[in-house]
Length: 364
Image (cartoon, rainbow, N blue to C red; front, side, top):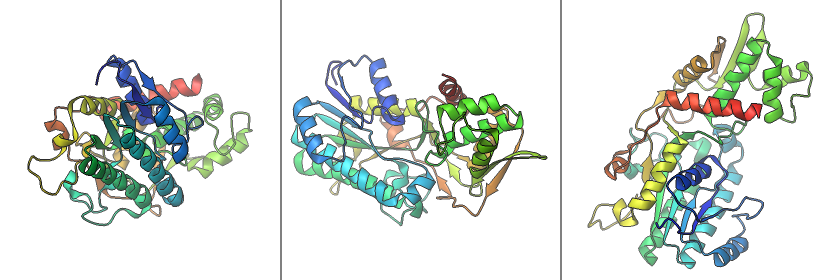
């Protein structure tokens, strides 16, 4: 990519897109196209068609998606499959029609089977059933991979797909209903510490920045305590406990979002579709590339790591009546490493960085 190439980052305000945009700017790229959801609804085919015709981007990062944690994925199943399919179909098809030089489609490692062999290699895609709680989202992302492969094979486009592992970082979602596990744990444990210390100013600051079910820092202590109790933050004579969904036993891999962005831009600069499968392959499939660390941690150990960093001295209640999801999800990053990229930020350092970012957010 030339430094003045016209680059469209779809989803530039989200965790993924904002990190990619920041990385591109850091590398000296200068010519960006961005649109908020209000400015351009990517599920609207006519609007996307007009946008591409008018703007004529050269490169596309498709980081826009409807995303959420295990609760949201399971509760809003129709929304997750419909909106993601529409976004993908519109952007990828218009990229083909308008002669985009290269497109990167971003998915998720939830595309792999529930009982996938570990670590998960790209070739394990579609070898068994998916985890039920996020099956609609996963099917949409699998369709996106196959859409890119199919356009490449039929029309000679240069669309590549990457599947990042669980991400966390600046601009993360801390909504206690819809966020992923790591930012949700940071916020719950932060609020648990504030409760333990009877620090209502800290709780009010948090809720003023990120209200929960309409409850902000203007509410009474009784109202705030009741709401926090509903989300598993319990205060009694014995201390403060934090509820965590599931047994705590599932193993998860986490990648700092800015590392993910660095990998994405690296691949856009260095790799083409033909680099994603062995030369001479007759049936070209599974051309996507895993992006991860190749290292994992249990949810219980993650919670304790966050507890130590934040300085919370309360307890955890692991609610085994709630679903665990897939018990182990670890990416095989051999393909990515062979192309010349490896992660830099370890989990402990990343949690500290994200907690610092969160404190600035709620106090600004």
